[in-house]
Length: 293
Image (cartoon, rainbow, N blue to C red; front, side):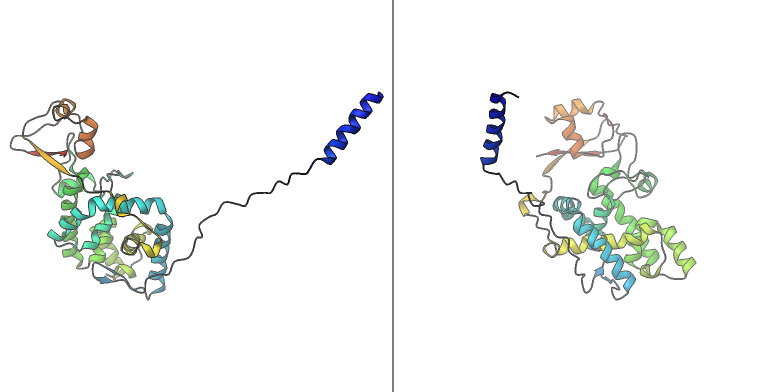
């Protein structure tokens, strides 16, 4: 190595040794909200009927569902938001039909206050199957499916609930039968010689069913206790609508919507029960199509 190369190397080493050292600190991990166990309520009722929280099995089943829904933040938040739009009307219909107010919470665990469709093709807020819908007086056809109408489906559900109450004489059992069916609950009662929901050995879905309702009820009625803070301005408001009476066939709903100065998408948004791009109207039949104000 030449003298010049040696001097260059020595100079480079000396320069780097004399430079101030930069300290790189490892950043702390991001803050994560603490997940805390929840204090359970001392007492609860469903539709005026006492929940036997003194029984360890009952308490632990409620404990599970309450923790799931408390920490399932996005789902529970949107249930609360949607309730601002739909609960007022649902509460009114339940009251008119003699159904306890607590049954409004069935809509949160059935269809999540949306027109969901289950893997078994149960539809809407109340998750009604096609045959059941027709039995309850709903129109289910190629053009119209009233299971998608939150108001009409709530009235139909009330028919089922009142019929089940005449059978069981217990609103708690009525709620369970909404999941398993009247026949299924009747078989369980007969086979086990027990007519108390909390003392029946049931399939997992029905066993959890009422406790899911109770958990949502508890959170909705005591949101601050479970760290939910939903501003009133963030709640979804009821729709302001006017209605057009239709007594004749509509061959093209796209053209019909344009004639009423809305888009086809808007028409379907406010009238999800319209299932086709046309509407056949039988003689003597009348439909009310909702339009936004």
